[in-house]
Image (tube, rainbow, N blue to C red; front, side):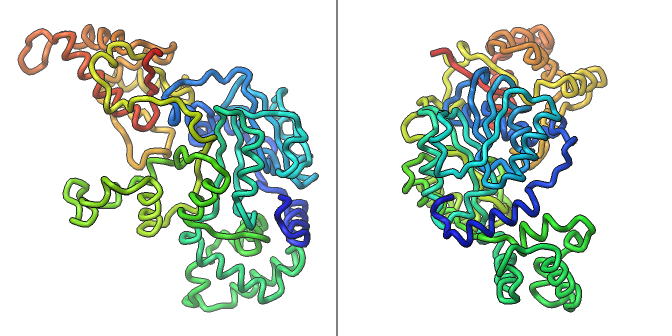
Length: 443
């Protein structure tokens, strides 16, 4: 964080020494948090960029700004076989991170008290860099991105995020008030927190700042973390989508995707996507990804974080989108279940749905990247069962479907192999959009 003013840098370090982040209990495991594991599994962004399923064995992952190590633990659980390296400016945070991974018996991990600008000192090159809840503290995010890029392998992927200015605008106003009150002159601790709580409680409920920012969570006994990370956050700053893309251009990095990409779908904001207003109907096909995301944040700023994946430019694998595949592509393709869905729990849920002839909800443990459930008819869902054992060719899944339903239920005529393949194609296409199923064509 070498581009920060020394005084601000010291305040940020002191804040995290006083209250290491996050305050997740040491014993808490992410094993049952499918959302976190899905997002932090390197398979997810690697497939989005390359349409290839990555072998995680031996990969080296950096948690840049590891804090108390909970995300480092998530990265270790989501990427079995990978080595985890964590860095942070706060000695207390690094101490807690080491304790956390030792407690959970994670052997292949190490932690260092180190700034991002000094990353080359580690002597590593990384397949994946997770830089969570830190980039917005830099006056110039491009400087930090450039430092991380210097230790990112050519095919590596970097995940980072910025606070969204539009979503967080009221809290930035609250932070200004705290500075005016002198609560952030030094490192905010118990006294400053008490003054803030007393002030906000004393205000009438209809006072705009209180009405727009204050909730009961700020008055709870364990509210120290949320108050420090919102009202009293040293160095906090908001950014827009154009700011994000400007930083990527300055650091010479290529945008890959928003992390929760399906929750940034502009078309989902319209009542009838098939009948758009004339302006959008004419302009949307021509505008860039950056412009689409910017319009979304202006219309519907619901995301606290502008959470994104990026990478070295022109290092990704060129591929044909699944929606554009021809018959010959499907006949050669292999299907994989996303690693985070290959759980005994989900397989048992599928078997139960098949036995009871009820629709199967494949995303039942996930809220990302979907915005609504995706039920699958239990009969055709049964064709997905072999994917829990390993990758399957699309033709093999089609042959299974042909055995499951050899006759057309309406005409009672035999179903042809081409008809079975078409139905499996439709099923896999719908699931691949959300990366529940990953599809590859042999090179």
